[in-house]
Image (tube, rainbow, N blue to C red; front, side):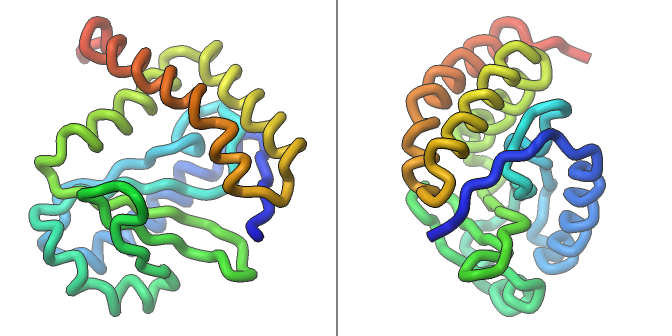
Length: 178
């Protein structure tokens, strides 16, 4: 059973993302469109599990399987869709080793999944009070369920679902144009 640990924000997380993204870019080659640092470690100041989430957009999702040997050589366990249609998911670590990275690959035109994740990240970056509430919930759940990873995830579901809807509404109405 995976242990649940939530820590204070670590300023090294963006650099750890950049280092791993470079390794993944090499593995994906010409099929890669773009990489994004996602999840809680991508939001400055947010308490998080110390696992770097990376979203990669590819031109052709069916070609991702061709990269399996390269991903495995980088230490990833390739897990297919893993509950989200249109995604290819991999994790580094687990099975006794600390998890360090989660990778979520989507075809570039999967706007539903891509936008949902980007809007959520940007909303938390622009709304520190919501990020703090999310961090507090994660900390509380990690304390209450330190050895129940699935219980921890279920405990966040309703909050994340509501926050995701709020984030999408904000994104379409108010996301600051640069």
